Length: 358
Image (cartoon, rainbow, N blue to C red; front, side, top):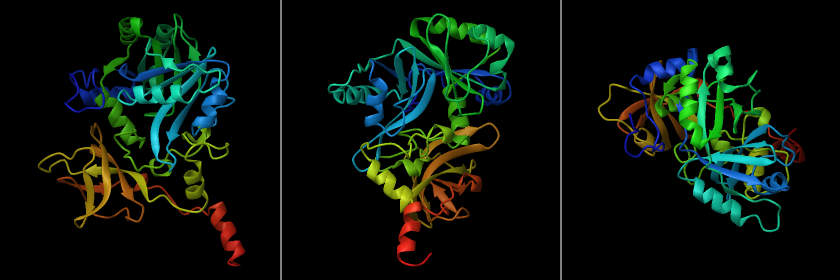
């Protein structure tokens, strides 16, 4: 079935008849999701990594061959413009991002080359499939992939005939992206389903992503979102997209100031929604408490175990037990999703020492 009108996943299946069974397969056995609408950019060139390092938030200057990372482009005020996943393999950095944002990202990269030996171009000769579930490493699936073992998190290995497979830490611990030649997409789909992977739609992927509290740019962010609010802070070891120990890049001042001295004004939480309410909330709806806007609703989806859930950017000061409304629905914050902001920041500690309070 195609996605509903206005979906951020045009051109791929929403589900194949039983979306909850598809989610169960992705958590208990193995499922394959068509994400071939993702926009792919290829960046060859001897200076591709050092160049990307200077214009993005992640530490990628020395990314080893076969390594991956999540990355951001920020504006001058530290607000998120682009989010992407990149993999360096065989002398080319492959970047994949949201369909609607891909052309703008490619244009930005091309404008930022100047004299660097880097040549960003449309790389949509590769298409993305996601293989999710504990049985992704079964002998049948490994044989279908043509590999003897699957890579570690944020690592990739080449596939026979072109492309590669990389492990991601979300939407589940057993998640693998395949970037394969687009012309071979039907063959790969038939091969993987023939090896036991259940076809699953974008609904299943989104439900697991929301349950894992992983944001999606444009859906779970707005034009004011900074990395701290979305949880995109930390190097590859922390599964983040902003490295806190790298050199200058656009927006770094905001990142450093919030990390060392301040707190994010909002944070990303998961909401449980009242499924019996008349009407359905939508992405972008206000989240309110006693009639007062306290946040913005992100992705809304039905989960096979938890029912209707959503991500939301909510003001940091809102307690976890606050009665909320998300559009027409009553909503409750999942307390396990509340980020902690009680750490002592290095900059704040230094200020307090200067004031003689420590």
